[in-house]
Length: 208
Image 1 (cartoon, rainbow, N blue to C red):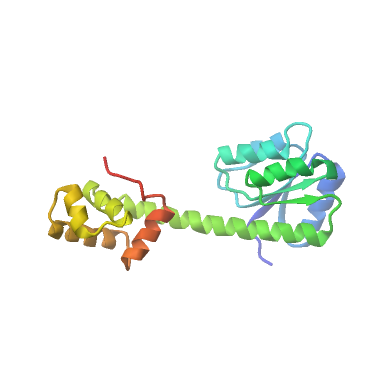
Image 2: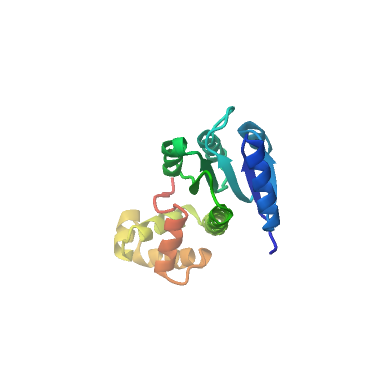
């Protein structure tokens, strides 16, 4: 397999960290291992690709806190937490906070590899979605203030006559702006335009 993403292993237990590293490398993954949450946070970049496999309970900073810090920094890495039996309630809290999965110790090779595969797939989907949103926002940036107002009205489901009334312009002018919005946004249909706007969070984006 050709792997460009990295699996970040974060665990203060030397034996667990080393065995996971060996297993993942044997499976063809690129691995970066860390003994503390702080050392991982000092190294990880915002644009990092891959996923994190991390102990939920560590002496310096726990897995839940590391995950929260990653979100604060907008580091879009899926996180799999590994946990002992007594840490399950904490792991459930982590899941509610957005962690991809949690695996109880002891776990089989198949279990952890399957969880990592799902996390990497989720991360890939998230990157594609972020790229698509970036393209939509770039197109929206080319709209004039009036075109952005028309876009908002269209996403709200208003017909041309209602838009004309709201914006104090003629229906014909609305048609012209609407055509320009569709062209600049590269939307083949009104439904496609609405989906784009909702996906990128433009539905409430009024021009000032």
